[in-house]
Amino acid sequence: MKIVYFVTGNLGKVREAKEMFEKLGIDMQQISYGYPEIQSDNLGEIAKYGAKNAAMYLKKPIIVEDAGMFISALKGFPGPYSAFIFKCIGNEGILKLMRGVKNRNAQFKSVVGYCEPGKEAITFSGSVEGEISEESRGNMGFGYDPIFLHQKKTFAQMSTEEKNKVSHRCMALRKFAEWFCKDI
Ligand code: ITT
Image (cartoon, rainbow, N blue to C red; front, top):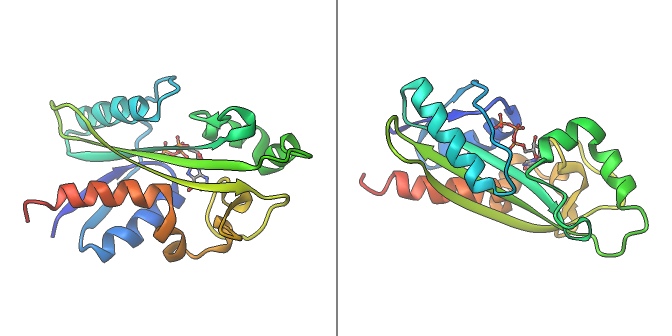
């Protein structure tokens, strides 16, 4: 069985990745190591730098994943700063910013970075379209899930399995898994 080491401190990401990798027969182990994240508008660059650094430090082939929510009416905010903005203003803060705004389109993007020690990182990306809801709904998932509507349900109203059928993260992880298993 192939093993993947997922370097992340986010247990929501771990739950989703485990559900998906298990179905594909890949053993996934979490490593909680706070790798450095560069400041950039580009999730791919953040994931590449993080993956290279984590592989070098941990001396293992690893994946990292960088994700963000991009709101059209706010010119892509909070985007690559999603984790920081979530900690500062949370979902209530985003709903306040969006009060009275008609265009509620938003997108989640994910980039998975894979790296082996001493090599260059490779990236795989995924995205999903949705809308910012008028109020918070559901209690599953994590982060912005309660305010991200996808086909009438927020991500927080979906089980991990349901979210994994459509999410940005699952799309990126699946592309990685196909590539990772191609020689088996
Ligand atoms: P690691 O870097 O340790 O993996 P993190 O939470 O800091 O964990 P990111 O830097 O990728 O991860 O931050 C992205 C933030 O965007 C995350 O903390 C959530 O607030 C939000 N986010 C990303 N994907 C999400 C999802 O599927 N559902 C809800 N919120 C999400």
